[in-house]
Amino acid sequence: MRPPPFDYLEPTSVAQACADLARHRERCAVLAGGQSLVAQLNSRLRRPEFVLSIARIPELAIVSIEGSGPGSELSIGASVTQREVQRGPAGDAVPVLRAALDCVGHVPTRNRGTVGGSIAFADPTAELPAVLLGLGGSVRLRSDVRERTVPADEFFLGPFRTAMWPDELLTAVCLPVPDGVWVFEQRHFRRHAKVSVVAGLDGAGVDSAGIDGGWLDRARLTVAVAGVTDTPVLLADAAERFASGVTPSDGIAAVAVGVAGLVTPNADHYGSPEYRRRLAVAATEAALRRVLGLAPKVEAA
Image 1: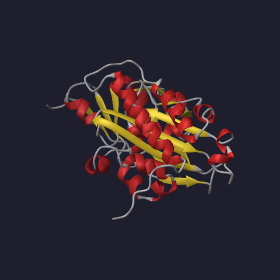
Image 2 (image 1 turned 45 degrees about the vertical axis):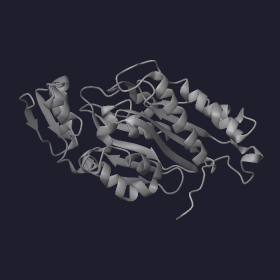
Image 3 (image 1 turned 120 degrees about the vertical axis):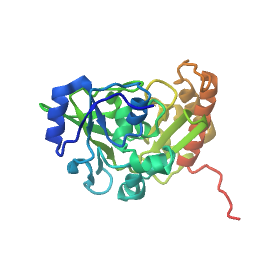
Image 4 (image 1 turned 120 degrees about the horizontal axis):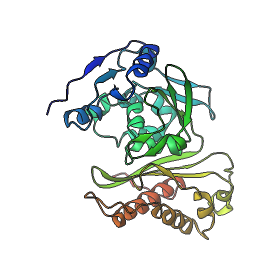
């Protein structure tokens, strides 16, 4: 199918783009990599009067790391492609982001798709929003009259819905450079029936006593999940659940039960809620075993 007719806007600065959005608001759609928007246009799911491309705005193509070591922040401009992040210094700085990108689409889609576009699209099953939420990241938004930073736990409002206003442009995705151990796990049985888990153990509070020494009740264990409800979601009591277990295996099982309880009963043709719970449990258990160094080691042939 062909898209409906629209006027094509190609600003060369953020200020010009924001002025266009202020003028056209809900009648305008922003084009970054186009991996989601073009499909919506061709299927007539969206019928904007204007399409605004950000491809020619140099300041949105910048990747930077502000600060050094733990506590520093990775900033990814809105037009930076997923492949560029995956293969570049940004992926080195935040390995869990690179691991998630390995599961996003295919290489041709990552060559065009952007990190900012995936975040703004807010697909509840997408990998990158889970990483943003798990790491406690944020997005920078700018309009003709304001500039603000919205934390991830306030940005995602529902399926394909965010806190971004019609006149705002997402200019950057910001991720803390994590300390400790962070992993990404995914389980799926069809392309759109997938559950992703981001699990991390913050380096703060971890000492040499190890698991048997009981340091996990003082460390910050984070578990974020996508694909179980209408938005990516944090398991708020992950550390407490783990600490309730007598053994590490008990603790992992307790966390997995908590994640299974997050699954909402939204049955669709991709899979039943019960099957999604099974995917969530499997992904959570695998992620935590890797975080804790309990995953079985594979012998080289």
